[in-house]
Length: 244
Image (cartoon, rainbow, N blue to C red; front, top):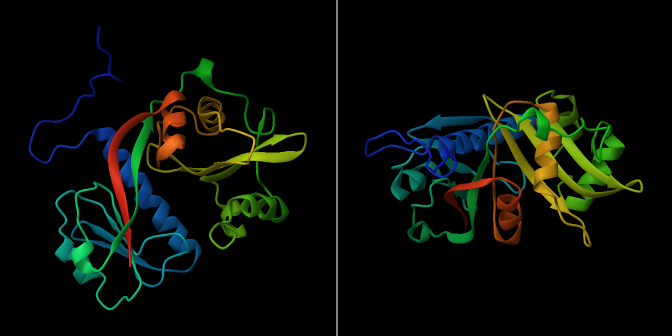
């Protein structure tokens, strides 16, 4: 017998999107909006494209495709005058080589249904996952992930963000950031140090303890994508990141 996971209900029509993909893309835009605000950078959404008003934070694109059907020409117009720029093509439909860009990487959006109460781990601080709360803890965390210039200490004062660390014998061996948006939690900046592997089912339980009854979304690639799927996430669409 098929299940909702096997056969998601997708609205009919030429512009129909898997609602799980729509949720993941929107959560990604929310992340960009918040990170730019953290760095004092304005932004705009127009004609299906989100774009930063100035230089975006390190490791982030200048523009993000928000709606299907955006053309390469529209992105070229939005990025006019920027010698170096990045584009996150949320639907993996564009060829931006004509705009002088090269493909940096391809990845896959993932979605996990809300965890049942029985699957929720003890809240961070009472299980293997702890919540990063101080500047010193964040500095240690970002040093392992090379994101010190991205995840600024002010992030710790925003209640809808949780920087999570898995600690073994007092040492951080894995990390993730969970951001509560409108109806979903974006899980990003995941990593594990050498000799350790991220347990995605365990991480999902820790996030659900903080933000219960919400789906989890994000994107991954390679072996990490396989681990996420094994941990209960579904692959729901492709994306590409381009740079010049």
